[in-house]
Length: 309
Image (cartoon, rainbow, N blue to C red; front, side):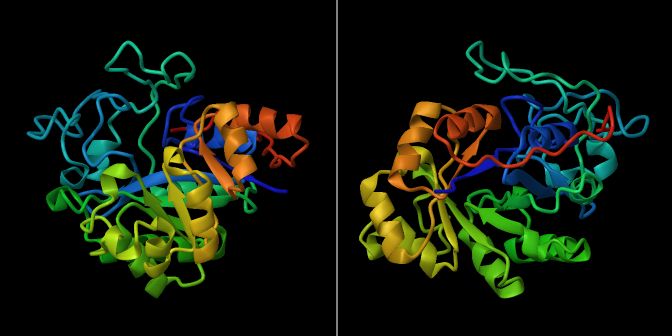
């Protein structure tokens, strides 16, 4: 049995999330898929960020993009209200936990002076390191409950599809979203590219599911995801049990839960029959896979001592 390991935001537990050094580290640990998040800037550039506003946890102001910039400081401002030049002044390489119990602060190795990368830079990184066999799992960050912070889902999806196509990566990628409008746009624009229906308890609402009410599907999340054009259902791992797996099997969808950092929980999910796990700690998963005699993905060897942010 083969179960995939997907590096979440690169390898968030090990290196700064959604950064070139973080993504490279995940490749060097060894993953089947590299997951990261995208949003659109004010000047229509695709950048890696999990949040629709500049996060005070993952980003710190260093200087304005130009003297007297009225938008400075940038932390806390909407991503879609800032240009790439403004966002590139941020240091995204040092985690700044807001709570003393931040579970990633003790394990994440900082990489100071790391910048917020563009989608194109990530595609270039993967090409330089010859990681064509590692799928790129591109999560499009939109929030239908906050439309002023979010790009139009159809336009956003078209931008991502065009960039993947320019780099010859449509067949080596997957498009992920909690906003199921993105899935339907991706099905139309790039039908050959896999589509992951993300879901958690907070998004079990028609506004997130492009008008679908789970009650109309008898609470069957997988059936609803299939109707939206998903090729995989990707729920928060706490939702996954035997009943969920049976429903997914009836819908013909593999299950890839997130975010699985406890090897004991990963072992339970493997026994349930998941197709992969999304994890902040691919190193922990590799140890479990090896202990169970399962195949682990091949690491990418380092060619350069330093990767600029």
